[in-house]
Amino acid sequence: MNCQNAENWMLLQDSGELPAKRENELAAHLHDCDSCQRFQFALIESRAAFQAVEEPSLKAVQNVLREARLNAPEKKRAKLLVLKPAVAIAASLIIGLGLFFGAFGPDEV
Figure (cartoon, rainbow, N blue to C red):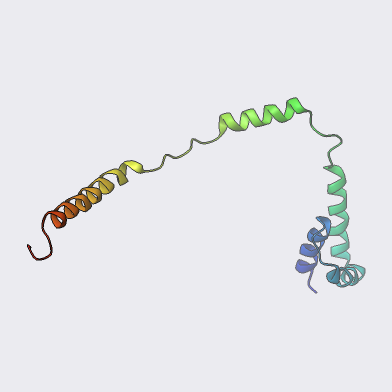
C-alpha cells in the first residue's frame, strides 16, 4: 500500500466510512510507516482542536439562516417568454388544420 492510499483510508476511517476489511491492511501500513503515523496523529489532533464544545444556540442558527436567505442569489426565472410565441403558433396551426379538415371531408379536398 502506498502512503496516498493510506491517507485516504485514514480519512475514511475518521469519518466512519472505511470498510472493516481494509482496517487490518491500514493498521499494518501504519505499523511500518512513520510518515503515515504522523499524518494520523495530526488528524486526531485536528479533530480534537476543532471539536465543538457546545451546540449553537437557536438564535445563532436563526441568524445564520436569515443571513443566508438575504445573501442567496436570486432565482432564475424560467424562460417562458421564449416559449409563448412558439406555443401560440403551434396551437394556431393545430386549430387551423382541425377547422380545415373538419370543413372538408376526405373526398372534398
